[in-house]
Length: 291
Image (cartoon, rainbow, N blue to C red):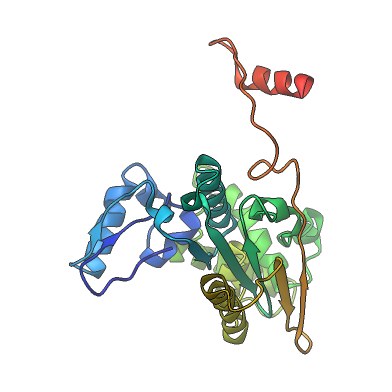
């Protein structure tokens, strides 16, 4: 979602997601309250010719959008954007945009085609996401067996105890170093080997290593679908392809079904009139009773 410009041109950027800012060496305090000004300064520092602007209908000019994003939040935002453009311009060719999404996790990857109003959207498939690894508190507190247990102990139990009023910044090398030192001592006490600085960072930030071959396969799949859309050279994917390369190479395609009650692409909208003094809790209770 970031632009690297060589010639003078205008760059546009969707709303920020904190976990994507580390490439610009940003911190959470940089996002609030003047993140736009900060981003412009960062972009100018990288290329003095770049112009940073904001156009609400920026994505309307692209009939095909390929996403290779690195967070769930960013994917959900882009998906909702494409669906909203379709709904706001329903019946017009200008409102229809093909969204091609690709992603990888180590030796596994997926690519999919999202056609608003016709196929399932990204929000429909949130239940397919791999849940983050969670270690039982009793294990990391009493009987650690893995280096990851020691790192979790340092970040989940020790940090709040030592720094009760300080929020951990997962992008701050000093914070990661502190966790690494504490986890190393914990590992030594239980005769556990394997705690490293990079592993500490990976566990804390839930980093999944990127594999070049997997990225190449998924990128090729996304571009192939874009080529088919643009030229009608072949039948496009309907609508989900997954690839597993952990043991050999295995790929599988299937049609992911739309969810009629999807909050983004499904269901009907309704207008409700409520009193000005209605609280959010009262409104939620009202919806639960009437829906």
